[in-house]
Image 1 (cartoon, rainbow, N blue to C red):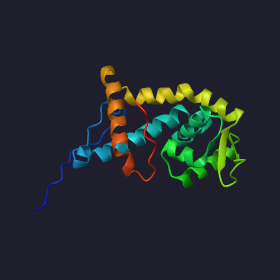
Image 2: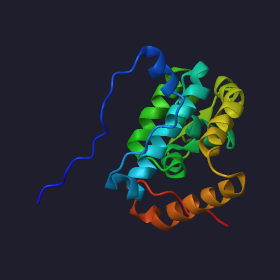
Image 3: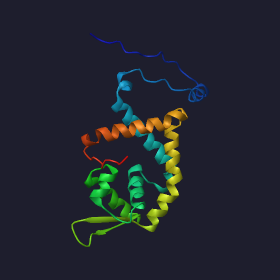
Image 4: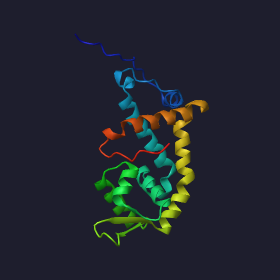
Length: 181
């Protein structure tokens, strides 16, 4: 059995009509992907990354890098395995991210005095300044992401996301520590 493809008739638009139509709300695709939570979560992540990069474009920082710097901003020094766990990324990936941040002078790395195998990372003054400088930009990206929801629903949406992440964390290739409370 074959399914007929749903298509809309095409018409040629002038540039003025095309520009005017750009402000109209785009039609939502009519396919089963829009009923799949995994697809929607991935798309929402892509949208958030784009918003974050727009807001923080001045410092050329990614959400993962900013998250890592934010964790280090709240602690004097941390080992790479704990950082990876806190951020929810693979240990190998955290080493790569730290290497790039170290080259930019945003973090300093060294070995633990008691166990040379343990690599520690700490925020530099330049890194702390970047975190502080981009804090409002990061918050704007979060606000923009949630803005289409009614204000009363935003907190509930974040709580539901947190519940889903917490309940499914063990299925991740890079599980995080369970949060208290």
